[in-house]
Length: 251
Image 1: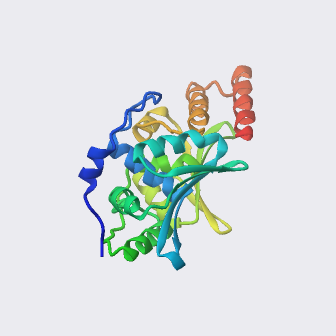
Image 2: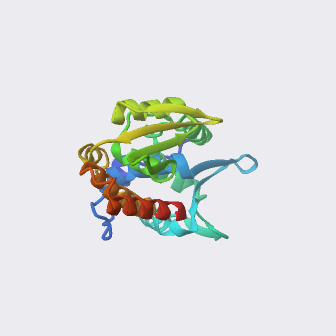
Image 3: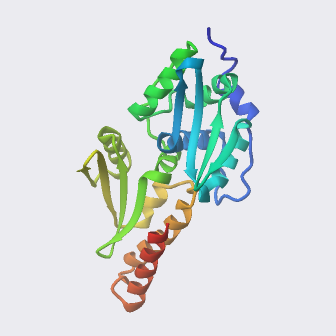
C-alpha cells in the first residue's frame, strides 16, 4: 500500500530555501528540475531486495561536496558520507523517499536507465509513475554538470556532451542546439556542437552551474567572446586559449 502523504505542492511548501551565493536564484521548481538532471548522471535508486528497501544515492568528487550539502538542506533529510576522493549523499528512509523524492522526481526523469530504477522504487510502494518527455533548461544544466566538456578546438568553442543514450542526446540536440552531430564512441555517444555566438548561450544557460563546472564554463565563455571579436589568432588571444586549456586539464 502506498504511504504517499502529499503532492508536489505540499513538498514545495515544506522545502523553501534561499541561495545566497548563486549568481541567479533557483526557485523550488528550477532547483527540483536541476536536481533530477543531476541525478540522471550522479544518482542511483538502489534496491536492497532482501530488505524491501531503496537507497537514494548521489555521488560526486570530494571537491564538489558543497553541492551535496545544498541538496541536503533543500530536501531536509539524508546524510553525507566521504570515502577517499568521493562524497555520497544518502537517503534510506522509506517515508522520506515516498513523500519527498517521489513527488519531485515523478514525471521529470528522461533517461531510460534512471526511469527503470525509479519505476522499481514506485512498484515497491505501489506508486504510479510517469516518464517525462519534456526538456527544461534547469534539467539540462543539472545533466551537464558531469556529462559535458567545454572545449576549444582549432580556435573554435565546442560543447561535447557524452552519454550512453543516443535518443536522449538527440532530444537535447533537437530542443536546444538544432545543429551539431552525434558520434558513436564505443558504448557511449558524443553530441558535438560548435558555438558561434554568446547570445544563444544566454538563452539556453539561464541559470548557473552549481559545481566546479561553473568556473570552467565562465572561463570558456570568455574565450568564446574573444573568438567572437576575431581575437583568437592574436598573440594575446592564443595565450588566453592556452591558459584555459591548461586549467581545463587540471579539472
